[in-house]
Amino acid sequence: MTSRTVPADASETDPEPPAPGSGSGPAAPSLLERRFRIRERGSTPRTEAIAGLSMFVAAAYAVVVVPGQLAKAGVPHGPVTTAVIVAIVLATLAMGLFANLPFVLAPGLGGVALLAVTIVGQDGVPWDSALGMVFWSGIAFLVLTALGIRDLITRLMPLNLKYAISGGLGLFIALLGFRDSDLVVAKPTSNALGLGDLSQPTAYLALAGLVLLTALMARKVPGAFLITIAVVTLVGIPLGVTEVPDHLFGAPDSPAAVAFHIDVLGALRPEYFPYIFAFFVSEFFSMTGTLLAVAGRAGLTDEHGNMPGIRRPFYVDSVAVIGGAGLGAPSMTAYLESSAGADSGGRTGLSSVYAALGFAALLLVTPFATLIPQAATAPVLMYIGLSMLGALRNIDFKDPTDAIPAALVVATTVFFGNFGTGIAVGLVAHVLVKAVAGRFKEIPAGLWIVLIPLAYYFYTLVPS
Image (cartoon, rainbow, N blue to C red; front, side, top):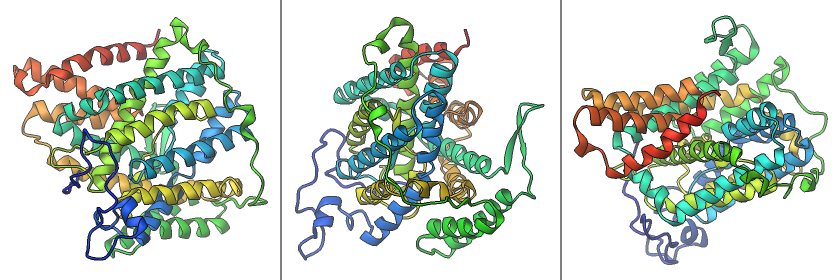
């Protein structure tokens, strides 16, 4: 996890925007500089544009995957597709304009799967009530943010776990890339991961893309992510990997069938509380972990691994969860693919604005999102994920009370397929290991309090 000197106006306790005259240099700062502090963060408008497009292309699959998952739960497919795009555009714009950070916000796949597969599909809960559960988890986010508890918990996280968050997120991102490209497949006989069929075009296209991307990054070629995605997409057309839709343009469906079809009061039934808590804890730590890891990649964290001014993105996240549930787009969160923007040089919210504009364009060319195959985005995920493992070298592996909790974050993130759960495991392990070793002074008092809700969270995960 890299760090840099963070501007003094981005403090933890003062979420006010910078003064209009904060630009550097003798000349009067431009409107973009005053709003986004581009030069101050060591970037340029061109770099921010490339980073924004990289984030958009890397995360565009959400427009296809999320509505498909929700449709399986009975949510109207066309309307929810429009609702998801609108939610992504509004939340990502808010992250850029209010928090001045390079992140794409979209429905988290873990939360979507919990709603569509478990709550609605297996337990038969109406989807409007499930959206109500997401709404109340967002209300809890907003209250804790206003009280300063979310950023307090972030500061309480031990430094070794913050490095592990970056490594765990990296391995999780890399695994997504390997699975998207069919390089890694699940073996039904052994319930384990195995090597895919390397003779299939999806697999060898992804491998070729990874080689190309690595070479471009080594040569410091600007826009390496976009170049790789474009090349693999084009080469995939004659190989049958890239499916060209019959038409690229078309008016979006009205979101009226899903927007504000939410049962807020019905979601408060006592038997639904474990679901609300599951949404809350998982998304809480997923958002926190993604913020810290990607901000570290962008050099926006301090020497302690904290991100000054983190309350502003927490506010955006909270409102996005609430508003997304109202629109029909559950579990809005910062996307892992935001790291594509950070690695492309994105340092400010201008990247988010460009990414939001890309998603807005999809309202008129929604079929275009299906043009980019997973084999084209998989090399980006693999490269970013593998390069993030370098943060683990900062952990003191000679001290087992630091090493084992950190390693558990990385391992359980992959084992459970849930980044938030991995962080929760690491926090519990850190407290317990330090306590048993008699090193109570190394345990912040607040972490003992955090153990109480985490214990209940793990209790809710136990099959009944």
